[in-house]
Image 1 (cartoon, rainbow, N blue to C red):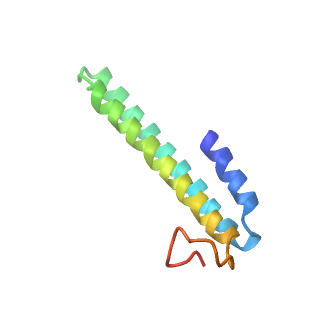
Image 2 (image 1 turned 45 degrees about the horizontal axis):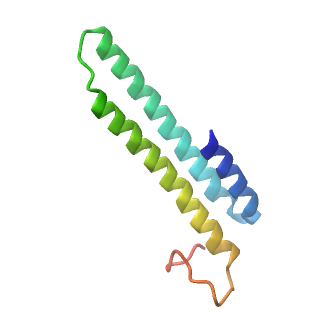
Image 3 (image 1 turned 90 degrees about the vertical axis):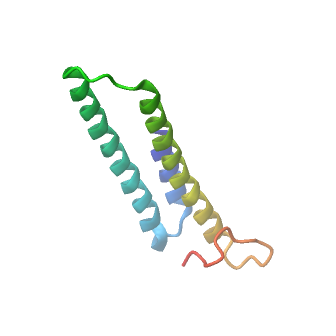
Length: 100
């Protein structure tokens, strides 16, 4: 939930014409959460049928998902910074191809 709160904070920093960027990240995070829930249900079903679940693989899966979600929010943060410094000749953009 902390990531979703951060997305909402960043949305408030964006000009209104760019709110769709934060909405995309919000939708992507919800989609990832849905995928994780489907994975959890699949693993639970496998465990019920007697399959041995590899804890190391599950931990790696969860760590990877967490990193992906953090990277999505970090990318949004960089985009917000670039948009807020638009026109500042001393600012070095994170994305050289622009954010428009």
